[in-house]
Every structure is written in structure tokens, then in C-alpha cells.
Amino acid sequence: MNESARRWSGYVCPDCRLVFRVPRDHDGQGVVCQNCRRLLRLPAAGDPTPPLVAEPVAPPLNATTTTAATTTTTATTAAPAMTPAAAVLQRIKHRVRKRRTGAATAGGAAPPSWDHQTAATAKSRRHDRRPLRWLLAGAVALLGVVAGGLGVAWHGKEQVTPPQARHLPQLTPPPPATAPGAAEPVVSALMQRSVPSILAEAEPLARKFLEATTIAELLPLVRQPERAKPRMQRQYPQGHIDPPGLAQFNPTGNVGINEAGAMVDVRTRNFASRQLVLVATPAGLKIDWESWVGWSDLSWSTLLATLPTQATLFRVIVKRVDYYNFGFSDDKQWQSFRLESQDGEHMIFGYVQRGSAVEAKLRISPDATSTPMILKIRFPAGVAASNNQVVVDEVLANGWVEPDT
Image (cartoon, rainbow, N blue to C red; front, side):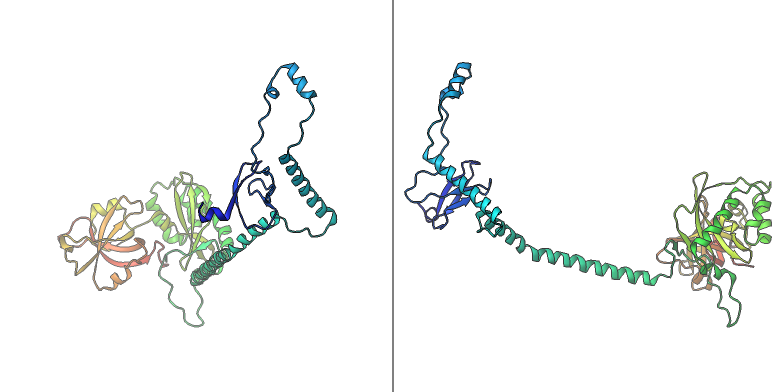
């Protein structure tokens, strides 16, 4: 027998058959089964074999017979005498019941039993894990504080007060600073209004605009109708407009506001998602019709067919690109851009002199791959160029809202 075996004694619970060990120097008279929670008595020196190690007695063979006569005889036979092991087990059960009943009736604190000691041990183990829980909770709280601080710092950089408003890239250059005492431009008044008031005025205006079928119906709704009327007559030579209709107003819930106006999303009846630009005027909000249709001095088909050498106003999507060929092959002299139509079906290459004032206005933000602009372009005269290469003479607006004239 090794040293470990000398220090421990093995036992088997008679109920759940759990095998466990008890130190030989244990000074108590009982032990609680860790599985079924039953109180078992430890045998003392000279005691008979205790019930927790005794094997169950096999029933007599005649007790398993199924005939009617045998069953009757078994029922009328006197109960066998109680074995010593059964007597010990009964005394243990009685002792347990008596201890629990006494504690309940007396109302006082009963001496700690094995159950209580085991529960206290488990509670102590749970207490040992509390520092780790508090450490994790503190780390989570610290992370939340840091994230909240970053959020406050980020929002502190933004100037948008209404939660449903968002600023878009600048539609037009900022208006020039007014002299002290001069009247403030009307367009800046839009930024002083609340978003709900803007939407309340814009929705019926957008519905009429998208449902209009004639030029006469459009003119009262648009900005600068005197300038827009001849352009509309060229855009709709028959005078009839096929209205796209309004299926949903402001489906995204976002409104972009800056010095040029307010930009609101709309969804037409043919499921196209578009944006309306509304400008503040002395007569109230009006729609910028030119930016809606992408109006230019010439159509794209006419531009590519006639190749005009005089400066022509065009609304394009400007993208950065490196393409140098034909008369624009010197990349030290020229800076190239890709100019696209609103629908993406047409494309030409635009060039500006490096270091010029036009190049300074044509720069695109590093965060954007493209930006809408209003440019004046022309095909070069007397230069060996392709029919898709133009010179950019002027930048009229960063965005598609044309400045007031």
C-alpha cells in the first residue's frame, strides 16, 4: 500500500453508487454524498460493515414468481427480521429528520451540517472569482468611456444641429463675404431654418414639379424662370413633358444643406432614386431645374458631332485620370481629367494647364473619386487632338447649381 492509500478510505454510496474517498484522520462521524446529497455515517472501529459499502441483498427466488398462488403466499408471509445494516441505515435517516425538524421548530441557528459546509465552500469559490468579474466590468466601462469621448470629439467637429440633416459636398463656391452693414444673401437664410419646416414646404413643391406636363406648369416652381424658360423650350421642343411622378418623398430621411440650397432625395414612379435641389428665393423655396435635367449649352450628341472650338457650358462628372495622348501627351504641361455625362453613357477627356488658376479650382477632394461640376470646355483649334479631348477654360461651379446671374 502506497502513502496515498494509507491516508484515504474509499466508500460507495448505497443510493447513487458514487465512489468517493474520505481522509483517515477525519474527525467527524458522517459524510454527505456529493451526488445525491445524502448524509452517510462513517463506521467506527469495530462496527459491522456499514450500509454505504454493503452490497444489496438479492431477493429470494420465489419472490419473482408470477403465478397467482405464489403471489398470494408472498403477500401473507411475515416480514423478515431487520438486518444490522438496515438498522444502522434507519437510525441515520431518523437522525437526519430529527435534526432538520428541530432546527425548523426551534427557529434558532442549527449547528452547521455537511450541506452547509459544502454550500459555504461553493460560495467561497464564487467569491474567489469576483475579482476577475470586477476586472472585466471595469475594462468594459473604461472602453465605453473612451468610445463616448471619441464620439463627442467627432460630433464636435460637425456643424449639423438637426439629427436628420447631413452636409453634402459644396454645391457652389461660398458666397463672397459681405461688407459690414450690407444685406445678408437670401440663400444663407435657408441654413437658419429647421429641417422639418424645409421638408413641409418642399414636399408639395416636389410633387407639383414631378407631376407637371407642360412648361407653363413648371415655370412657377423653378428658380430663375426667366433664364429657365428658353432652356426648357430647347429641352422640350414639343412643349410636352413626360412627368416621372413622385412615388416617395425623402425616403432616406436625409437632407443636405449648405450655402447653395437643400438637397432632398425622391423616388419616382419608375423606381429611380434622384435628388432635388431646392433654393431659397424671395418668393420661397424653388427647384433648380437645370441641375435636375443636367442642362448644358449643347447635348452630348451635338457636342461630339460638331466639336465646337468656342467655350461651351457643360455639366459633367469630373474624375481623376492619367491619360496623355496626341496634342496632350506632355504630362508636365497638362493635367488630365475624365468628364462624364449624368447617365454615364458619354465620356471625354479634359485638360488644364498645370499651375493655372483653372487647375486650382478643378482639384478634387482626396476623399472623393469624382465630383459634379459646371465647366466651360472647347475643342482645341489647330492642335492634333482626338475627338474626345477638350480644353477646360473655366470652372463655373463646384456642383451643378449655377450661380445667380
